[in-house]
Length: 174
Image (cartoon, rainbow, N blue to C red):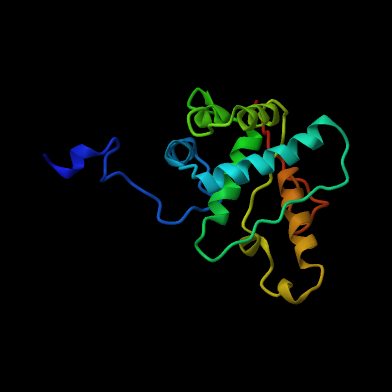
């Protein structure tokens, strides 16, 4: 028997060596969702995240924010990207993102929290802070706020560098 026949997926398929924020076409997202492995450690972290997230859905809370830390190459960016997909819960090739996790999440309470979060219409702003920052801005104590403001303005259709200038998105030709 050939080794390639032992695997469910083609072993010569394109596999991204590094997960990047900008890879957001449906084909890439579907591959990421289908191939994301929820280890017991990730299962716990997903559960903790969505239990806390659900508190904000159920009522007002004053504890908003998440800190994700780990060693270089430990999967932080990939984890955050998967969380963003789950929160946004858009449809990828006819299937809601949370449904890609029906067989990956074993705890019915966590799955329920995922689905509850997915039912809320949410705008997700996911970006690489280094790519969006100005080259000299890291010396500025307000650099993170400036980058967040720039990305938010771009999301609203304004020029990130000059926010009082709107970008016309919908042009109609007569």
